[in-house]
Image (tube, rainbow, N blue to C red; front, side):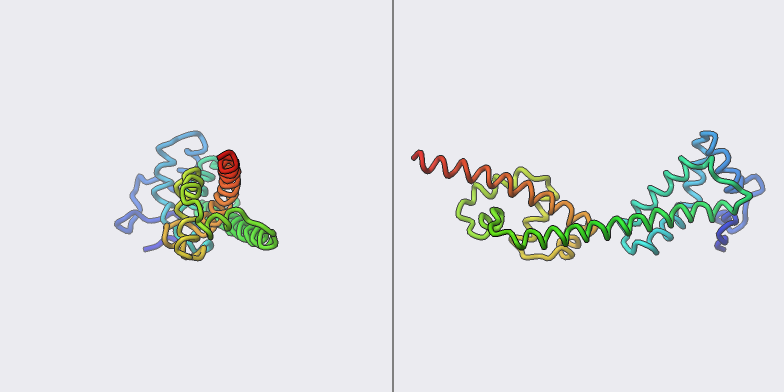
Length: 210
């Protein structure tokens, strides 16, 4: 049997135990720093919190992040819960829903920034990264540049440039959210552009010296 929002959830055998504290009581104890009470709150609501988050963000990994953030909010703000204003379940799930909506807005903002970044760079007359990668005239220089990146940045950029994968394909291949891939690749390309330009300049100086 599933409890309705605003009521306490049943025990695993379907019947609440006679000595089992209600969610409202557990939140009151949590507000006073009772970690054991919060552990029980966590166990009791975590499943529905994740389900609520997933219904909004539509991505399992993001939903898990949102659920953890929401549960931390419950711990931090337990003292703000007021029983007279509504049931404990409704309060917990409202926190979750707000967190999920904020995450969706954040991901949309990341996508918009990435699109602006791509439009801006598409107009650039010269791109050192594309030049080095496309020509591959100095493989050691490119590898040295890639080695300066984080493992996720290096793998994502390699999949995109060398295997021709799109952002969604890279995200699926690496098993990370699309927004994370876009952000890491954007930062990695900036670092790679700087690194390759630096290495390329030193290479040119060395050739002239020779």
